[in-house]
Image 1 (cartoon, one colour):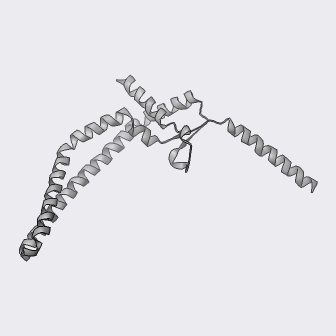
Image 2 (tube, helix red, strand yellow):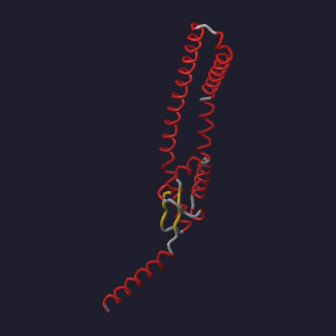
Image 3 (spheres, helix red, strand yellow):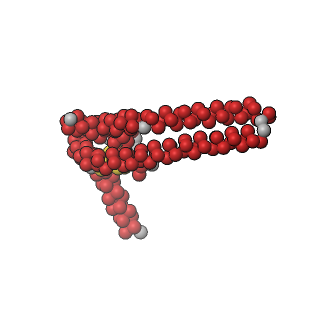
Length: 173
């Protein structure tokens, strides 16, 4: 029994000492994708994409407007339309939907490719920015925000990393 009590006391001391050491540990939490996509470099890429796909966006809006007009016309005139007119309207609506879907797929594929290209081009800059923030802040541990079910906002270093990325991009220019 005495050995058991001594063992418990020793284990308690070890746990308390580890807790004291852990209290001195400075922890940061980072959402790397958020840091990258909130950066000035990402805004430049976003503006380029908006310009590049403005024609597709306009065409998609036109197709959407045509589809809505076709639906309204169908709802208003369905009772007096012949089977041939209903078939023609359905065919027109399907054609418009196919065109709209093709535009959406093309834009989505291009966006994914651009995002991947941006991520790859910024990987080195992100690593440098994180290293700088960790060194300046004296962090002992940086966790990915996705792996932490909860953390205090005080631990979040994402904005600091974004600011460092912006500084580096201004310096490069």
